[in-house]
Amino acid sequence: SFQKLADILENIKQNRDNMKKALRMPMISLIVLMFAFVFLVMVVVPKFKGIFAKLGSDLPLPTQVLLTTQSVLSHYGIFMLLFAVFIFFLHKRLHSSNQNYRLKSDKILLKIYLVGTIIKLSQLQRFTMVLAELLKSGIALTSAIDNAVETLENEYLKHKLLFVNDSIQK
Image 1 (cartoon, helix red, strand yellow):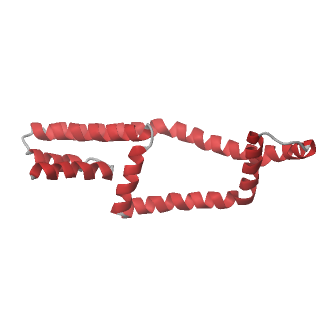
Image 2 (cartoon, rainbow, N blue to C red):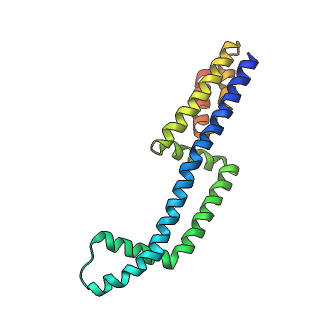
Image 3 (cartoon, rainbow, N blue to C red):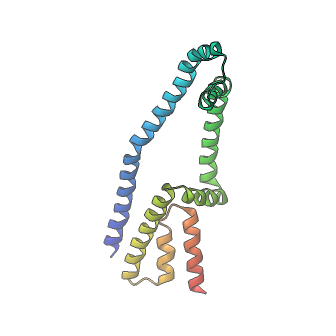
């Protein structure tokens, strides 16, 4: 039974690694797309800005938005990039050190379209596989839930499942 549980946990780790590999290429593509957009806005749009100024007529809304985006990025782009990097590292630090922040951010993560569903289903699949194996081994339900919850990474789901376990014990 412990061997079966070890196999399940190893399978979970392997699935997580495969998911990371599968998401690597889309992430790289997204980053390249963002750099290409910034390049176009910062290099190509200014060349057309003079042409638009010579026309002197009212520009369509999408063109105005593009010119405003170019202006904002050229004046504040470095600050926006530094702010985004700061927020990223602040989030990582708070997520690793602050339980309340982790609970709230994991709850928000579960509300993101499609991503939240994937995370929720994978976490619950992991929980139920481990719980089923622990129950087959003859471990009491409340102890099995406590142990199975520890395999989850999402703090919000952990919190909710531990609340269910507390309700069962009462």
